Image 1 (cartoon, rainbow, N blue to C red):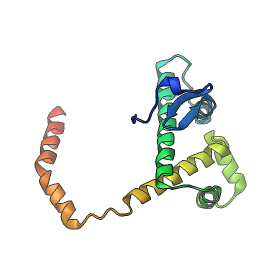
Image 2 (image 1 turned 60 degrees about the vertical axis):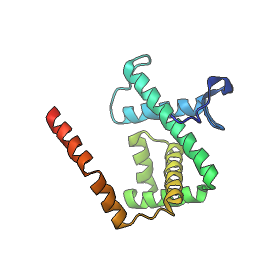
Image 3 (image 1 turned 90 degrees about the vertical axis):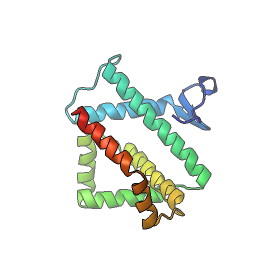
Image 4 (image 1 turned 30 degrees about the vertical axis):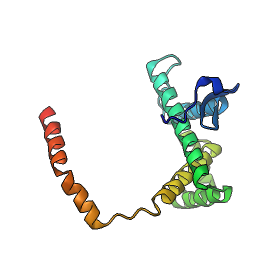
Length: 171
């Protein structure tokens, strides 16, 4: 994790982590864990028991995603990038049209069968849109010519050959 992840003495009551100025609440962590459980059950999969290695792996994955989202939010603030509620609504409407034929009923059924909540979908869409906008802003002025790409691959030709040789020798 980045160096922006702060020590536990900066945690407020109810926090599970702090990333820069972004606090990750136990409530948001619990909500994300509940989403994982609903999703597993909706797919007729057993959810790991508390204390098991598999459960610990899910907890770690959920916390990592929350930390990454907090890092993304910090970077977005630095770059003056944001996503409005209207942006989320527009993307959600496009998804409903593309995947559910515009049917609210089919969309709701899809949420139910996959174990998602409306808020979970909206939060995920917001994160995806924000990530794309941060990427777009960072790469907006990047200009790589075909000549640069060609030179890059020529410079690394021997590395690629050696790594493929290593992979083949392990088979």
